[in-house]
Image 1 (cartoon, helix red, strand yellow):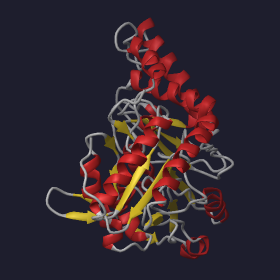
Image 2 (cartoon, rainbow, N blue to C red):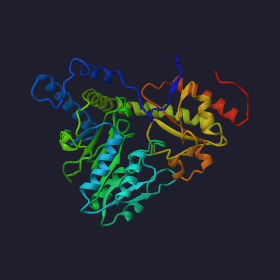
Image 3 (cartoon, rainbow, N blue to C red):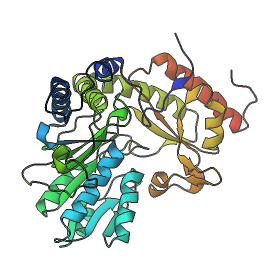
Image 4 (cartoon, one colour):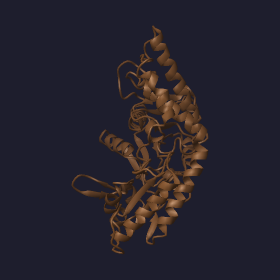
Length: 390
């Protein structure tokens, strides 16, 4: 039975899986120890839980548990990776290569480092959202220390040619970091097969709790070294000081375990529902997909509705359907999505785009309802009929 509102904004955040919550609950009350307390059973129990979660996270991405550093989320992991490499490898160079459609956590970190003397190359992308591998390789210079390219884009779902990028980085002796926040748990990610040296992820994108994430740091072939960005206590091998969020870490581990078991089946189901939604809305006419239709995440579509303002569309839907706009709006001035602009869209088309991202609990009835409501609203906003949403 359909329950409103319908949630189709899973790229923004996901609900905690009930199995994740169940795994976390004892560590708020009964097993509340500090994982750094080594002198009694409460601390031992907490450390044991953290160690097990570290293995669960590592298993999902083909890493070893000793390569996982827990953080407060992907934003902190992005900062630790990029700033940590910049400071540690300053003797080798100051040049970092990234793309123009990275998450703000990467772009803002790079802009901060530019003020400190870093040279940043922001690669353009194709209309489908891919970096050009030839341009990437041509941008490498003797002072290049890091390539930072996301695994999959949060707005359009395009999956980058990560393995090839990692191969190029390895060939030139440059470290490769990927923000895999949207990819991990949705599609297979393997740090060795993909030639990844550093990888950021977060729990709340894969049905875990907010406020917990992880950074993968390669230990050999090559061994990656970082300068810590937070001092005090030497936790997490000295790379991330601070009392560990044991419940959150347990939740991240459990979420990773569930994804490892159910990811392929879930991806197949969601891609069918996504395609059903997409094909119906493309049938409205003057609607097209932003980004790649082939190499993208299974649960997301970003659609441009020509002659329809996405904010007006979203406002008409927001009571019963949760989606996100391709436009990032401040309180005063609406700005078009920098990701969509980078694909070559005009301001008008970028302002006419919506992202629909499905999730574990999305049902076919919800997709049918969304098709009906979006279709009616688009016709109304185009002046093709007069009606009211119920």
